[in-house]
Length: 362
Image 1 (spheres, rainbow, N blue to C red):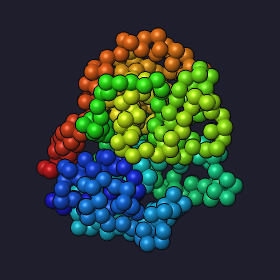
Image 2: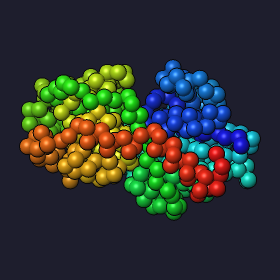
Image 3: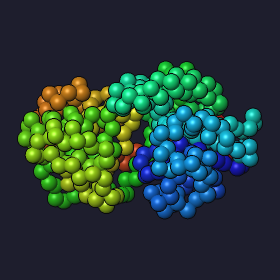
Image 4: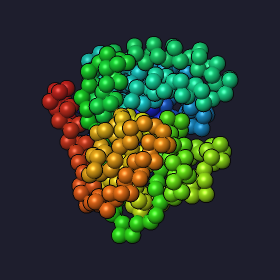
């Protein structure tokens, strides 16, 4: 059986790329297709694979891929997958729109329907300038039509969370099976020495609501470390002296920050959220907005706490409650919970799905 794995773009090592990495370990002879690639930013195991790109790679897509969204449907459909019996697409940016042979099986692992053209469209629209708004107004309706139409090209959907499963049903009118993405538990350790700071980690984008954590920690005079690119000057101006922005961190530095924090603050509405489980793998509790994927990973009173509104006031109340019961959290118990989301569990569930649901012997 010839297998192709299709990802949207390979320009970093985040949750979606970790899924591709795990799939490549399962299928070592599979070819990888994507719109654009920057091999310098990939893990060694991915960098050495046979990766085929679209025409966007040749016209500056590696650097300017975010500006090429209107061309991505054409680029995906130009990929020649006629030689493959099984195609596994990894969908968040457009990926599932590839064209396969009529007798091939197409399984889509959906991290999320494209949020910037669906439920988060107003947030992205309001965060850009006039020219970008004009382009979004023109192209987004066409992309929505294409996105819904291409859902019919998929034989089986896998959702990365129950929250995403509901969105697949809402936007595509398709059923799906939930298989949570893998977390490399072995990368993280329980630190013997904690430090007095809360942590926010990940690329700073509008829907992650990092400003809530900044405001809450400023108001409560608590130390906050924000790790990740994309911090605006306005957010820096709103931050008090207890807030530290450290930008992007390498893997070892990120592991160190996570393992030594009092707790991870996770104020965004995420489809799943890998970072909370990385914190739990380090034995650290998570204070998360109580909707979306966090409802599937954060167990109140065991691995963290939920707060009920995306406001600084709600987070402040959650932080004060956490500090009242902080000593009751068991780092070893928190890590054991995270182990249920490990790479081995992911591979087993995907194998069982392909064998039992799609009747594929892989």
